Length: 122
Length: 315
Image 1 (tube, rainbow over the protein chains, first blue to last red):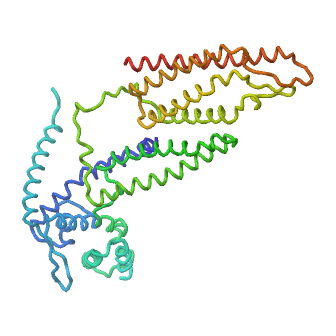
Image 2: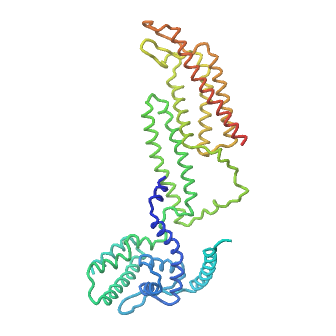
Image 3: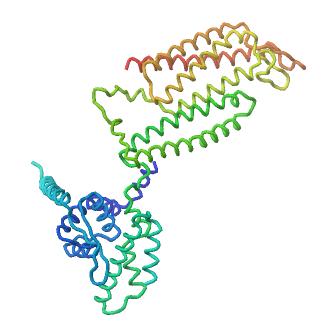
């Protein structure tokens, strides 16, 4: 009952925002892995993604990068640049293989989804 | 930059010891670089509001810190179905145990309201403890990555044929159990046969006749067995052939007892008739009519229950 009331009280726009977030969540990982084929530190990674149209807030990006590193997909090292210590990330070997596989999956999913979205019926 | 320092201090307080320094250093470098970038683009020093806007972009320190922790769910989605079922079963058992442990109170002279409040308070207390322990158990399983996937192994062939018609409401069953227990308390404690008054009005005191003793133990056995069957139904939340058959057998036995009661010569005896405002015969006749009526309704309900159980078995 409570769940039903909560669903009913959500506006159409809130539903959309929630679904949009869900749709986007999985793609963030792929975008971050792909961008880290070149070495970046947190802020430069964010700026580069933003320049390509992918806006990720810092509160999401930094923990995500750290989780990916923990999973062995990224490697990192602390270095000093412009008198400031920064942590630079790049794809590990496992990360490269995973990125290749995920890219194939993404392309296949995109193709399938486009076929479904473009289907007009008989 | 006190505001940045405050933000990072707050963030640190939510992080675990092992990652505290690294996360702080990384975010500090990022915030300061953003500040420099913005100063360059605006061509002036940033004021507090500008820096506040940058920090707001990072999010609440507690949320950011939480995103760094891998386990953010007390019971994750893969454990939740088993967790929910375990809670249902354990709470059902706790409810039955609460009723059974309070049998002395139910059988005492305490009034119904007091009994109800004590039962509810006991169930809430035990239920909260059970909820906490079951949740803790699943949290430990999850934190230690102990897999419960074995419980999800299944085959369509192994699924039992559950007919939706055979599902029962736990609340209804609990109500039945409570009524049975209160009845047993009254039947054994408050009855007293020849000495205790069943009802009285201003001018007469009426007791049940001694003939009721003939059915004393048969009623106790039938109601006792009904409580056991209901307890099984309550835990399983559905009928099966065994409980249906047991229920039918108990209903048939109940009908036999009712038939025996119908055969009593007198249901009640009148001990006093001080001023004789209503003739004794009229009182006895009224009592007989009333008891016959109650027994008739009871017999009809039981007969309907037998018919309904029969239909369930057939289906």
